[in-house]
Amino acid sequence: MRIAVFGANGPTGRRLTDQALAAGHEVVAVTRRPGSLPARPGLTVAVADATDPVAVDTAIDGTDAVLSALGARFSKEIITTYSASATAITGAMARHGITRLLTVSSSIADPNWLPTGAHFFNHVLDPLVNRRLGRTLHEDMRRMEAVIRQTDLDWTLVRPSGLFDHPVVTGYRTAETSADGVFTARADLAASMLRELEERRYVRTAMGVVTTAVKPNIAKLIWNEGVKKP
Image (cartoon, rainbow, N blue to C red):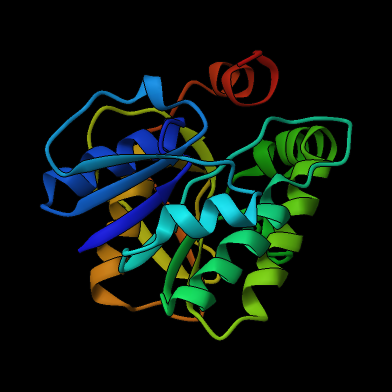
């Protein structure tokens, strides 16, 4: 399958690209920084701003599916990256007749998400980090989800929990709407997207993804994901 990966040079996009190539897919890596992606068999690099409808239209031409791993940093300012890119991508897909879309969102987009037994996270970290520091980011994720839900595409909203780096895929768990767990390894997130691309278990709904086999250092996770400058 020939797939377009948006955010291909980001922390999740790199894993998604690597795993897709290893699985035998052809990958069109859509990025604004092409020099950061090494040339490999099966990989085509398309230079595009994901919020630019014309550039996106050109980038996805000839692909069979679109996978978006776009991300943004926490900010006090209004964030539009997610919703603007969703508008550009879904519009281009409709014009090209491409129907399959998987987009990374967040478990925070589920208003009823409350991990079992995670007292410190539910009552301290979530209100402080996600609901306060990440408020503008998650507001735009919800706008993105609304844009995608209004389309006729075969979409899947992929909702990980707190993202962290782990070198290999583990025995992750998926569930409709959101999954009961606090953390998601990026390797597992990428693997779950590629599996869903093939299995189509969560078409036109949300898929939660959580990692249960390993856990990150919480202080390091907050620093890397919400505080450290890119």
